[in-house]
Length: 323
Image (cartoon, rainbow, N blue to C red):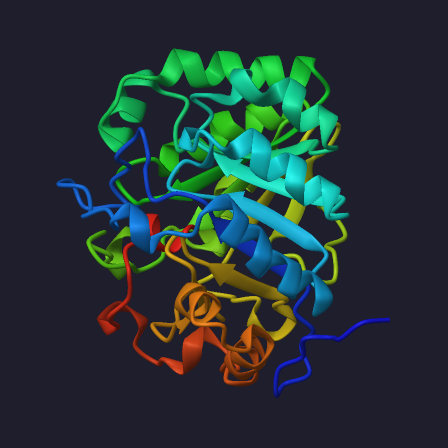
């Protein structure tokens, strides 16, 4: 058995989320500023070879689960090569988070490398609201791709960020969707990041979701996995499930097993942390990546990056972190 990445609170870290691009074809209001973000110059981003070199070190240190994020990961032209090489390295727990616009282009490749669970970010079932939140008119394409993915046997999870006075009225139709279709809806509490105008008044909480769900449906609690970020339920008799990711009101920090690498090769030990370890520069200088990774994991705080007042923190925008 190889090395185990353990922090000072005894949490084992075997799950790496990798942003493979900062680019995105949507402009979601909670994710990036309306003007977009300045993109990192190409020479300061890892090549596919460099990315694999870094990932191989994590593999030696016990990481066995990978999720590719962005930006929009399907916007990176080398995605098929990245998937092939990860599969070739022995990763069998591969996952991806997408906005769904390009999903149909990659279904065959996903099946080829055993990637059968896809997270699709979708905040509304209303085409006009979709255009308002994404600043793009791609609703019909996304819905068609979700259906195509399910038809091809993929397990589709829907990530829905809830905002008060915008889409809390979507809870009932989303749950109806999960009742009649084998779709897995995950409601996400709105989290503070640079440029997304976070405000507690916009927060739709875990309890709010349950209260709304019980107005319309009989629901049952499902068993959550050891490292689950979400609290899972089902509408009784439903084909799918729903869950709530309660990052703000009931965080899951005590069982967190996740690390994140940004598109420019920086390691974040917590989504909310503004401390980053520059793995790409270290790799290019021939430094010891394992020691840098160990130091980052050991310095991980017990909860929410040790910050009591998250909305006032300085951090990247969500698009620059990779979700």
